[in-house]
Image (cartoon, rainbow, N blue to C red):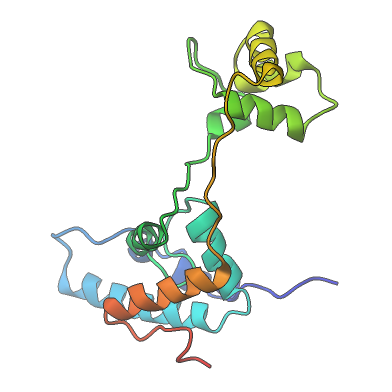
Length: 185
C-alpha cells in the first residue's frame, strides 16, 4: 500500500513552470508578472490542500536546501523561515555523493565519522574514495575520534513541525498572502 500522493505531482504545469522557479527580473513584462501572480496563487492553494503539506514544508525548511517553489513557499520565504527558526541547512555535497573529488580539499572530520557510522561494513579505502581523500586521512580522523581529540558538534534541537508551521503562518501572513494553513481548516 502506498501513502498519499503529493498534490504538486498532478499540477506539473504549475510547479514546473519557469515563471514559478525564480523571481522575475526587473525587466519582466506586465503579462509575465500577472502570470507569475496567478501561478503563485494556484501553487499556494494546491500546497495548502495537500495531505503532505506539513511534512513537505518541514523537509524544505529544516532538512534540505531545495530549489524553486516548494510547500507553498519561495526560496526567499524559506530563508526567512530558517532565520526565524534559527535553522541552518548545509547544501548537499553532490560532488562527494557522486564520487567527484578535487585535490587538496579539506576533509570534514564529522563527515568521516558520519560515513563510517552509516557504512560500518565498508572498507576504510571505500570511505576514503567516497570522500576523495587518502586512506591515511580516514585513519587519522578515526584515531582522533577514538582518542577524543575532537569535540562533537553541538547541534541545537531541531524545531518541531508545529514550530515550522507557526513560522510559516507568520511569514506568509506578513507577506500579505492568504495562505495560512489555519484558514484552510
